[in-house]
Structures are given as structure tokens and as C-alpha cells.
Image 1 (cartoon, helix red, strand yellow):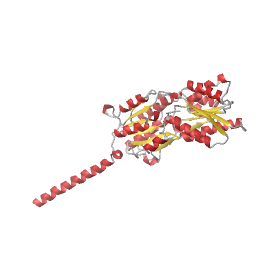
Image 2: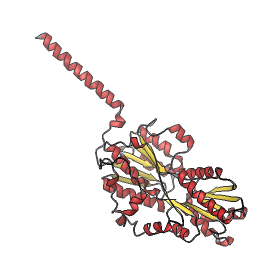
Image 3: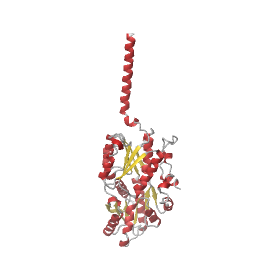
Image 4: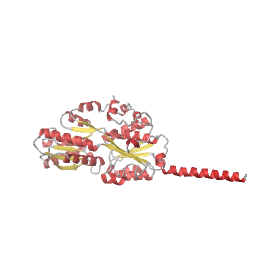
Length: 384
């Protein structure tokens, strides 16, 4: 009897040891197995209040409503210190969230990823990638920092290559026997988006023959008035300029503002274009003033919520990659009317955005989906 009792005690101890070992093994993979109970709490941090970010946040809010996500949004109002304060406020205590989303504002992404990882809060980088040296330091998402789930940013390289080629081709049609002389006006020197766009622009020029880049200047806060002043200075300094590359639609607006005192006409004396689906930009393409634009990447916040929702719901997106590029639609005079008809203020009101069904893009909700059909045109079609 005593032997049976000892055997029973031994068996129970062995059982509890095994259970404990399995628990320890499971804790080694805590990041992958962590259960988050809906509604998921997510915070989005963005640099400033501007038309692009208004669209970005409005679409995120609609996606959050569809997916049952409790979304908080924080504007840094152009202040890096304020953004860090806001970021720290949701990493612990009563305001603690499940996930933080942010862009690489003034090269802050690497610091934010580390802070979130230390707090065991999931993070996701959107809209702009880190610089090459920071990317090398940080590695890919989930390599060195397991709580950094992924990153999504526009295909700046491919898009800017296409826009730059359109500008150069238009200039060559006008001046077939001349060297094409180029200046550039870009956004803040510390902006991740501006850095990527400039790198793509310069790489495209290296692949072109008979072109010369005179100078690229930077504009703080993507400001139209400052762009206008610097455009005038560039055109007086380099009077042989045929192409004025711009880092955004707002900068193109500034360029067009500054041409009249110089007696110049865009689309005739020089060719310009940049990224952004502004109404003024689309109309300028239709009127022959601007050669090309691209946009739609303000949908990235909504797409990122779909990926994060799926991850938290047990449907990891890792098979589709942890680094995703958002394709942008390039608009020229050939297809501009399609975008003018569909990118109207009436169709992009908060009320009309409710027509979009973001649940259809989730693999956790729609198990039959093989991949993520993140297509900007599908968003437009739902706004009719």
C-alpha cells in the first residue's frame, strides 16, 4: 500500500514537472502565442494635421469601426517631442494599448520600435521606411524585436521612377536635341518619405542619358509658400532648367504659384510633377500644366489595421511578408479624368466612407481568401 502511495506521489510530481516545463517552453514563444481579447486597443501616431493625414485617419477610423477596433489617434502637430510624449502615454497604465502604429517621423521609428518592444506592446511601421543605416541596425520586423510585427510603406521607388521618366520624356518631346536640365524641390530633409522619394529620383536619373541634375532643395513641412520662393530662386539660378521634380503635390502647387512673376508656363517652358491626389493636381494635369502624379497611399493605415486584426485574431500575415509595399496609381493626361470623377470631396466625406466594407479584406473573417487584395481601386468603386 505504501509503495502504491509513493508511486502515486511520484507520478503526480512527474506530471506537474512536465506541465511546468511545457509552460516554460510556451513562454519562450510568448510573442507568437499571446492572446489578445477584443475589442483590440490600437493607437496611431501621425506627424501633423494636413490633407493627406486627414484622409489617412478618416479611412483608419472606418476600418476600425468595421473591425471592432478601439482606435486612438494622436497628431504630433509637427513636434517630435510631443509625439514621443504621446507615444509613451499608451505604453503602460490605464491607457495601455495592444498595438502602436506610427510612421518614421524625423527618424523616430527605431526608437519607438525599441520602446514598444521593451513594454511588450506590438508595433507596426507605416507610410515611410527607415533610412538604410537604421534598417541595417534594426533588421527586419520580428528578427531582433519580436513585438515589431511588420511594416508597410508606399512603393516610392517604383512610383517615383515612373513619374521621373514621364517628366523627362515630356521634356525630350519638347527639346529633342538638348540635354535635359533638372532641379528638384523635396520635403523635409528628415522625412522618411522625402528621403525615399529623393533616392528613387536620383537612381532614375543615373539610368537616363543626356540629363543633368543641378540642385535639389528641401522644404520644411511640405509648405507651398516656401516651395514657391525656392522655385523662383532655382529658376533664376539655373535658367536652362527643363524639368522641376517635386516630392509632393503640395510642392507642385507651390511651383505653380511661383511661375507667374518669372513669365514661365508649366507644361511648356518646363515640366513638373509629384506625388499626391490633390484636386488641384488632377486639374493641373487635365489642363496640361502638370505631367504626372501618383497617390492613394493614405489607405495604408486601413490596410495595416486589417493585418493587425488578423494577427491578433490568430491569423498571422507572416506568409505574405513582414515588409509590404503599397502600389500607387500613376495619373497622366491619359487617365486623369477617371480620377477626377471619383476623387471628389462629396465621395470622400465621412458619411460616404461608411459605404466601404473593410471586413471583406480580412482573412480572419473570410477564411476563403488566399491573399490580401489591397487595391485602391476597389475602395473607389465602393464610394459610388
